[in-house]
Length: 113
Length: 114
Image (tube, rainbow over all chains, first blue to last red; front, side):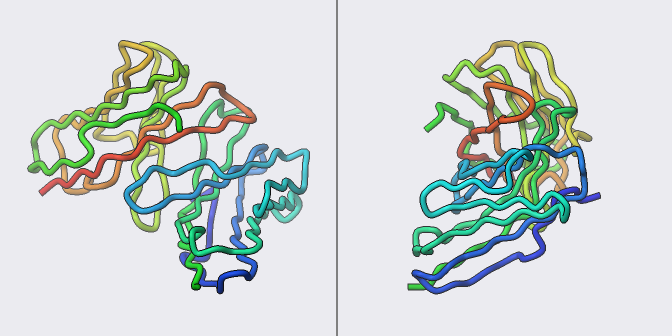
């Protein structure tokens, strides 16, 4: 039972354009959502997060949007840069599950110069 | 960067042999986790620890055991490795539990079981 799903295994965009990565979840108890970025041969690094009391959180070029009614979140990267090429993981946690995170499958983003 | 190291970084072993992976942190964080990453599955939690000698199972714990005798070290043991345990293993740490919990990851260990 995949509680967090990233339905697009890959995404390719041109440098300077917007990248939109999507994530859906099924567990209505999730109340905190995170995005991680992963380069090859490295561990995932925390990128940005949002709690369920908000619908948007922005940090520089990165913005995360949360639509609780649709159980959907998205990560927008504007403008996209070649250095953004990586695998992006969506993750979620619930207060009731303590410190445990549930991850999606990941989306490989490629930004072409 | 969070002070997390994993050893070894690469290991090739044979089916049926025991394997121990080590995670070491210098951040004095209470919570530590072991994940495996496989294509099409993302990161899946194997075991986690919420304090010295306090551990619990994750979603894919069969075939794995863990131990935490010191705050800074979290060991993952495959008692008898199988080919299905070929994967990349990541250790992570966090200071808090519950909401607003960011986990920080180590560099990973690539394990191949022949």
